[in-house]
Image 1: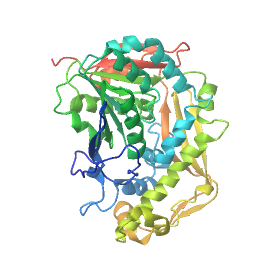
Image 2: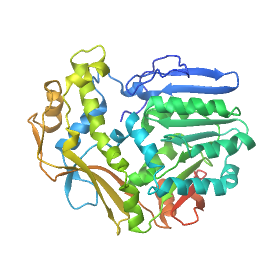
Image 3: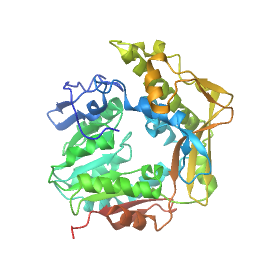
Length: 410
C-alpha cells in the first residue's frame, strides 16, 4: 500500500450511467439531485500507474507471495505461498460475497442485522449531531442502511463516509442511498485505508468509525491492535468513537458450514482471487507494452498466470486458536510462467525469473478469520489505545458490536 495522496483526476459522474471500472482513477463531486448531497473522491490515484511506479503495487505483492513462502498464518506449522487479501474483492468478488451473506449457512450477517435492529436506539444515541460517520470496507451497505435510517430520523448534520477499493459498486450503492436519505450527506472514498484516512486529519467534527462484519477477524490480535491503534493516531481525537464487529467462538460445525456452503458460492469467491490476479498481471503487461488501453488488451497480454481449473478451495478451523483458514490447493503440478515484460520485476524480488512450480497438493494461503472469546474487546482496547464502552449481542451470543472511544490525552 502507498501512504498519502499523490494525485487526483477530476471527472463528473452521472448516476444513471456506469462510468467507473476497477482501474480508472477518478475524483468527482456532484449534487445527485436538489434533495441530496453526494460526493465521490478516488484516492487510488496515489497507486495508479505512473512514470515512477509503472505497474500496480499488487503485482509485486503477488510475485512476492508466490516466490517467498512464509509462516502464514503466523502461528501455523508450515511455510505457505500466499496472495494478498485484496484480490478477493474485485467487482465479481464483491458480488459473490454479497451472495454469501444471504446463504442460510452464513449466520454472521443475520446476527449482525439482529444486533442492529434490537439496539439501534442505543447505538445512535452514541453518535451526536454534526458527526462524521466513517465506514471501513462498506461493501453492499445492506446492514448500514439500518443505521442510516435511524440517523436520518433523529440526527442532524450527519455526513456518512463509505470507504472501499472498488469504485463502481461503491458509487452505485452510495448514490442510491444519497437519494433515499435527504438529511444525510454522503461521501464515497475509493481506496485503501492507508490512502483514505488522511482525509480526516484536519476535520474537527465528531467522528464515529464503523468496522462492521467480521473484518477485524482477518487479523491476528496483535495486528488488529496495531491497525486500530494506527487509525486512532491518524484519524481520531479524544472522545471519537469506533464501533467494531466481533464474530464469537461457537460450535465448530457452525463455523465450518459458514465457510463451506452447500451451493459452492464460497468456493467460487475464494477461487476468484486467481482470476483477479490474472487480470492484475495482464494489465501490468499491457502497460509495460505501451498499450493505450490496458484493460482492453489484457486478455491477450497474458494467457492466464493461473489456470483456475487446476485449483480448489479448502479450509479448516483450528478450534484451540479460534481461527478458520482459507487456502487454494493445487489439484496437479502447476507451472507459473512469468511474462517477459514482468521478468525484471520478478528478478528484483526473488533473484530469478525462472518458471515457478507449484506441486500437486500444495496450498496457497488466502485469508484467516479469527473468532473471539468474551474478553477480546477489552484486550483489543488495551492494545490499541482505546476504551471499551459498550457491547451489544444477538440472542445466541454468536456476534457482538462493540463501542470503543479514544480517551482524553494524559
